[in-house]
Length: 436
Image (cartoon, rainbow, N blue to C red; front, side, top):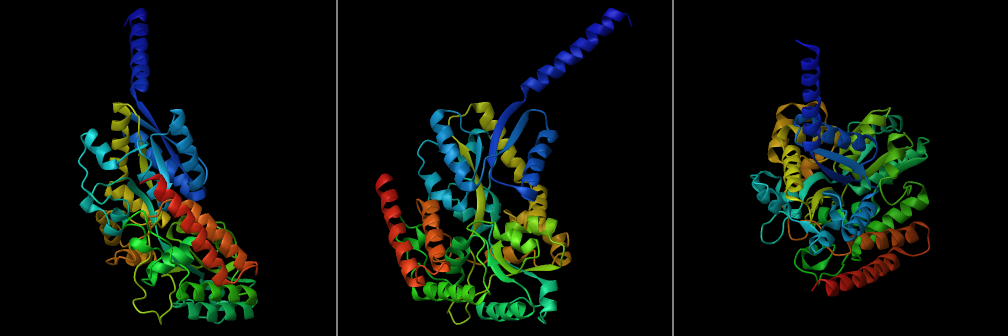
């Protein structure tokens, strides 16, 4: 072949390559995953990008859940919002009422001409993100629930059966006493105290957290977590803190490091902590159901959903909507979902992903990894479906502040919970007035 023809051919190939590279529609995904979870999120975006050449997803860490949500609202007002935003479950009501800022995921799939059958999703997960008219508002992604972790090596050293997790809170304090007596400085800690000890605690014991079906029944819901049962539980935790059985380690997931570093023997937190625990723990550990009070009728019921879902921001071009739909379709594949569930401890969001995991023998090889699923596939009651309240992130902050007053000995549990309900109700009234 003559030299100039070869040069033209090479140039043509390069031009075609450049054109195809330019042709890829890029979309941005803001997320709040760090550590091992952040690596897996980046891996999912990379896997999708390599699976085809038409679309490219840029996964960007944008801070903790509350930070990324605030940043996205500001970005939307400025006209440069991301295409996809990961929002934690307590932000659901706020996003629902963010008029014009989001597009329901079922509409996105319809606009893109993609089939979207919500019947394949785990009901407790899908129901949380579905409007009263049956329209799915956001795409369930990293759905978690509250579980109990314990250090089997520390249990054995303390003379406890490492194969037997405490089932009730009474058994937790009994184990804590033995762990302390064996020389452990931190017997028990908890991540996400407001979620674990009030929100999930309520559903697990089949008692109301708020009126109006915990907010699902209307914007005029009011808080009810200052009941005798709630006060009893927070009083127990306060007493255990004084006795050195309970160590407070922070409002969010910071206490998880106290567990996987080998400092604390027992932890209640998200099933999604599994990824970081399995990556970092240098000891034998187990996952078990959340403890409960066995003198409460109807307990245990089911724990509530945690984690986050993916919301599609409004005001995007048709090709970006198409790219977003393709990416969500990719994430919903049973194989992708099953792998994500197995690696992270988050729930399989579809029945197909759960079946695939079960059939693979994963639960048999990794005892306890199905605990979160079993806690969630129970038929929910009007008290246990979850919590959908406006200004829920601010209410959580109020609860955290008041619980910290208890741990510091500044308020009694009754005073703190009464104050949290009063302050929280003021936030609910404000949200109701703004969105009537």
